[in-house]
Amino acid sequence: MVAAMAIDVSNHNGDIDWTRVKAAGVSLAWTKATEGTDYLDAYLSRNLAGMRSVGIQDGTYHFARPMVGRANVEADWYVDSVLKAGGFGALAPVLDIEVTGGLSRAQLTTWMANWLARVEQRTGRVPVIYTYTSFGQSAFDSTQFTRYPLWIADYGVSKPALPPGWTSWAYWQYSDSGHVDGIAGVVDMDYIAGEVPQVAQTLQVGSTGDAVRTLQQELKEVLGLGSTFAVDGQYGPATAAAVKSFQLQAKLTVDGIAGPQTLAALQAAVKAAEAPKTTAPAQASTAPAAPTTATTQPTQTSTTAEPDAAEIKAKVAQVQQLLTQVDAILKTI
Image (cartoon, rainbow, N blue to C red; front, side):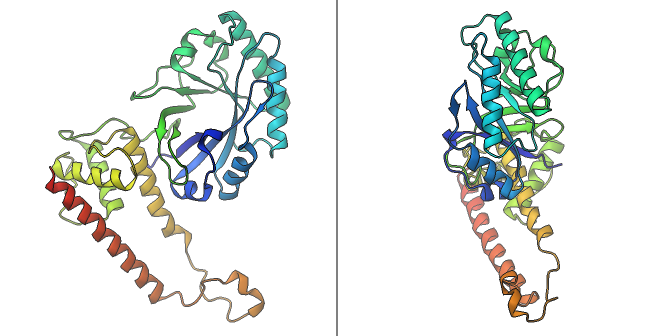
């Protein structure tokens, strides 16, 4: 199974090309909406519009600045701002709780309960709680909030640690330094419950087994490697060289080690490579020569041999270029 790719963004990510993000394999995304009682993210409206225009399931989040007696004010600011920007989308509202604002554990627990109840009352949807592991374990009484889905941030681990009370997570932010085509710089990366890549562990020279075999098969598909590239479940120099070639192509750290970020990017590349096969079926020559519908026939010339041949030539050239990169890397091992 190829896991769905999810990201979360804010004004820090600048202008985003959502068409390229979608093509890179992203299917869910959250954008920051508000913070405290008066901050509105400048990119809220355009990010929501961009996600919806390409079919990415969209969500928003509110970064909390807790103050005693101000939970409803923050909740209303969030809801009103999202409604003005186009309304809540496919994903539930999110409370991003990372700071106490000087509140005690009991005070923060009360503040969160009030905010969550207010947003649920106004939207009719059960909000999600986003927090990071150590904060959720100490800053508030997490056992009071187990009815709310958990979005946990925990990096560099094979399995996130959960605050007391929760036995599962809905979303897991596993990296704050991912790379996705269409976004300049780094971006937060997330897993969805039930769709964590099956090869989420780190694979490197010396690793063996089905996880390596899956990795090799995906490398072979994405890089167009020939029959000389073995899919044998043995992570040797050739597999490391292929990983380096992919990392170079995906603009990741080139170290020949297949960690969670490389594996997630590879699976997204597999998904993106498969997409064109299902998006260009038979819209062939059903309309003979109607000039009045010319705008709906931009490239509908003859859908037989010539476009296919050109596509094949382009792919062959791409594969040859990638093989040259792999050979060059092999010589350095």
